[in-house]
Image (cartoon, rainbow, N blue to C red; front, side):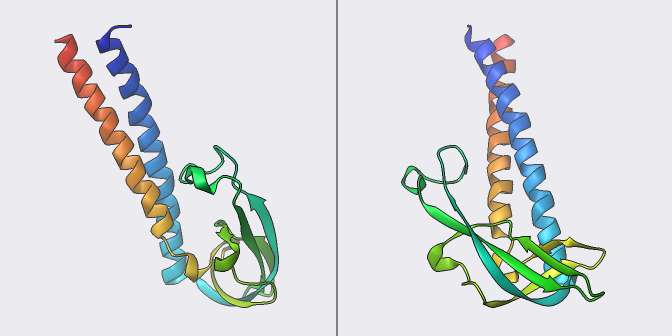
Length: 154
């Protein structure tokens, strides 16, 4: 495989992968921000913790030391303003020391039109913006490979 072909291959992998990562994470960040700013507020209760272990390849931002680490997804129950009883798992897992214990009262923000869309204000949006940045870096690297491929074939 020539250098030019390798550059084209890398450009075709990194650029779209970065774009997809950035777009998906950006949508999640904007959705969380919208819920935090305009979502209805409800008091919920942590009903249980779903335990899981970080496995190799299951979490793209984990380090080698994280493999085998046990983390917990809090499952929160609340009642929406229109009387619907809801119970669902948070989207972000945390280590034991950073998760609220079962029975804890938590504030949640949810979309009244779709209460399945909710967030814990303590989750924030920085998590998603990190992935937006990673997507931008991947795309920039891919565009660099593309420029290299174009100059190599000229």
